[in-house]
Length: 477
Ligand SMILES: *Cc1c(COP(=O)(O)O)cnc(C)c1O
Image (cartoon, rainbow, N blue to C red):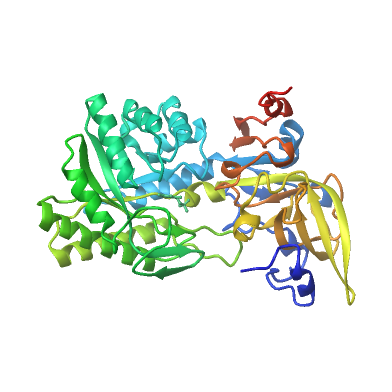
């Protein structure tokens, strides 16, 4: 773990650990690595330094800033659709039928719901608010899976009214709540049991344990998952549709999935032996990683799909089980790289670190209220000057927000041109997942809008929140 972000790391400047290597030249300082930036990102060819701004899907970021203001989330629609379609076709295999659920918690809005539907994906939601967004945008209930470790009765009722196709059961209480609600509605609810399989993955690595000390799921090792199945199969208003596990995030290989698939398939075999029921569906969850920086090397959706299919086929054959339907739930891997955040530079402060070293603190007009991931997870992002290019030398910089908190850091260590100044536009790449979705109103700062761009056209996806929106909540005004 790192120490407090604004604390002891000040001392590390002599060997800036965590800082990416210094760019070799101006070209590298301004490059838009294809792994990291949306498919539609490009720099114009103008010869003058001030002309070489960045466009997304043919729309100049300077025009977007002028029209919509900053901070601004820019969503490359074609990028989103391309990634969604790549997942759809990766799992489209006649030998192992499979469904892809877009995990809406990464980022959800009515436009995104429609794109997900048009690209042939299903949808995960984990609250009444996400569910209503999907339903009101016209998404078919039977293609929705409802997650969450503490769904309320009214949320379960809303889901039953909406004809939600799968409930992912996360507790014994939920079994009772859902069974009673389904009975009242005179329907049979399809349920998957969320199994804690003892694998935890984050950021390139995973650990496998027998037990898991976490709030999600029903433990396999502790017998809770089998007990949940026993209770479910006795209830006429519930139908055991399958087993589910979700092992973590930013996963770059299939080793963790291999263990979770093995454990789910073994559980399916014991369910067959105990109850005579063939489990029809195995959902391996989401967590497929993306590139936040040039060194991240995520697996192609189709390569991972081939491997996951192979694993499930092998595990089922070993236990003589009929092949279940497979499901995966990517969120970040679809929307993460599709979006960037555009900020305007407000102030640049050069802080002397001693021994001839300095760090440039570049304050932008957003921060931890639109991207909490750096503060929360030590996430690393790529940032570029996008309103122009500069031939000034690269200086070690830190992009910070405007909030009253010293941990309000957007990009901890990066290189930016020395002549950066007020009014320049910076873009942070790969902010589509868990940034706008986790945005807050800290310091009464309104949340930024999301604008989709496609073939030179713009479309507002979420409007900017206003101070009036915020003050309207204040009962004393
Ligand atoms: C968060 C979550 C996902 C999506 O995770 P990503 O890392 O965005 O792919 C999928 N399934 C479940 C159950 C989740 O909680």
